[in-house]
View (cartoon, helix red, strand yellow):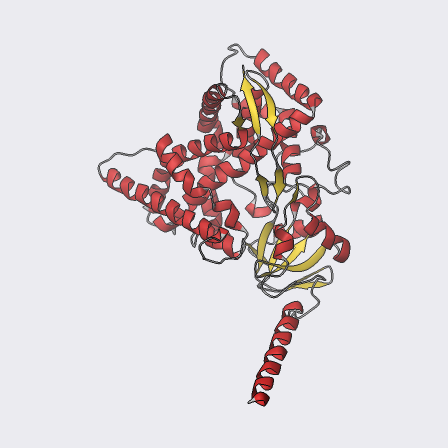
Amino acid sequence: MTWLVMYLISFLVIAIAHWVYRWRNPKCKGLLPPGSMGFPIIGESIQFFTSHSLQGIPPFIQQRVTRYGSLFRTSIVGQKVIVSTDSEINHFIFQQEGKLVHCWYTESGAQITGPQGFMVHHGDSHKYLRNLALNLVGPENLKQTLLTEMDQTARQHLDHWTALSNLDIKQATEIMLFKLAASKVLSYDEKKAMELRKYYKAFMEGFVSFPLYVPGTSFYASMQGRKNVIKLIKETLNERRSSCKKKKKKKDFLDYLLSEVDKEETFLTEKIAVDVICMLIFAAYETTSSATTLALKFLNQHPHVLKQLQEEHEKIIAAREDKESSITWNEYRSMKFTHMVINETVRLADIAPAIFRKVVQDFEIKGYTIPRGWMFMICPSSVHLSAEKYDDPLSFNPSRWNGQELHPASKKFMAFGGGQRLCAGAEFAKLAMAIMLHYLVTKYKWKVVDEGNIVRKPGLTFLDGFKVQIYI
């Protein structure tokens, strides 16, 4: 009996040792980039999620670049990952969408975005869905419709905020943008929009997490939130179908999608439409509210930049016949320094700490083999904060953008992604920020009451909010 127990223990030890060895030394038809896979299953997730300060390249990335170079391997939330901090490799990967790689998130992110969302569609189907989204947030609709509505919305909320002595501008801007998105997409009034918003709150935490559907985990909370969001959107869709039969249309984005669903030659279904709506609303408020808040933080710390921004907007008002009129599209496009401020803010913000792609075909790059099935993680901060790409990269200096193209992505600027997957809502986000800044440096005054504690873990997190006072 003792012999049998010893045999089983020995077998178990050997099996575990073999498992650990195979985990740490993944099979590859060529030479894998250097790196460590960490512990089995857990990988290096604990280090990846360790919170760190707002400034600088994440320690997780910096330490491994120092040790392994600009291309290394790791394992995060149970997935094998190749990480790139090389701008040339990043640019190459963006150009390989639909060829060597596909847009992807982690397993948790894939489930949260839904089985029919933007991520699972590639090639022509993705192009089609992207064009649908641009019908709502693209430059043409912004110019014709949304600009005026965004302007009115900002002024209404700013007037309301002046009555508050201690305003969390991150949360307030988030709510403002969420209500606007819910109104334009689903024709929700304020009460209905706030009901929907409470289900979205857990989305961000679970995006990059272990896909453990167990109560108490961030992934479980995110999936519960998604379940309730989808339920509410489906109810609205079904109600709309009934009202359409009675010839009562609201002419919002949902109606537009349903008209596309009803076309004879289309792959768009109601299930796809629901997932598209789910992610469009999420994308409309989360990152933009964070960027707007950081812009105020940086402007508060750099009075000379604030003064220069104020001068630009005062000139715009001085040139108007009606000083109280809304911002026009031409005025928005003329805000050169404002766009520099926005670019500099999102460069330093790096709100999306990583951009993921799924490798669908083995390929070689710089002497290394990138295996099919692995995740490829592009790290924007390593480029945005590189001393090789920017002078004094950690400083807030909007004037560094003077004379440079301010709108598209490039090898050294990927705040809105790149390639075919360049963020469709980039112009929406910049317009929302520009409108807020316009009124905050002209019609209103503001002061920071409490900056709170802003950290990355790895996504940007405002632990205590960002408190300001807005007054006339």
